[in-house]
Image (cartoon, rainbow, N blue to C red; front, side, top):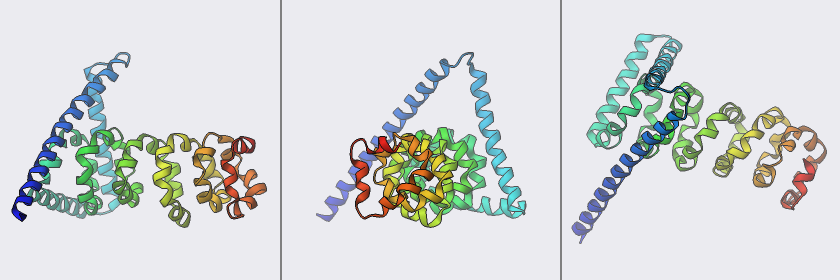
Length: 279
């Protein structure tokens, strides 16, 4: 019975992997078709522009490599450490079958970003297993933002584990995250506040298209907003349409902050019309 169950599991795994491969091919085909359609909408677009784009990506990736090596201070040690890590990772993924299953199908996409990825090999190493788990399924969504993610990797890396653990939430909203990255990173540096906010992130991230425009004002008024941020996060859907509240958060909270400290009183924000009056 145990052997029969093992065969069933292997067959199911093989079937799922074959399905993933088919879906991956369909995603690649549709992605290329979408890119071609969007490029045709660009006035004066031609093939040389696409080649220029590839060159620009490679050039920027090389720039990341040079900048990282320079910052390291000892280029020889830097190359030794990065190369050693890259070779070891390649050996491990090849031995486990992940090289063929997850990495090689994505080489054409990753090639122009290779210098920047190499520059961060030692930082990526602890996250490799999680990256491989999501690489094949999410790379088409991540690829348009890879330049920025590689260039800002030193800022992003402390939060990479959260992003990988919540890839199903984070990746579909990368456009909004990248657009508001500086403001988001500001709040990540507010140690105690960020720790309190982390449980709310799965709720906030999918709403970044509405919450994002508030972030510059909230950042500016951080000293006023910080004590109430987790309370306000509960009412994000009610508050998001009213940008004037965040714009004048210092005044609003100076007068009405006491009310938010009264247990349960903050639920008045859910009453229709209250947020509109505050704005």
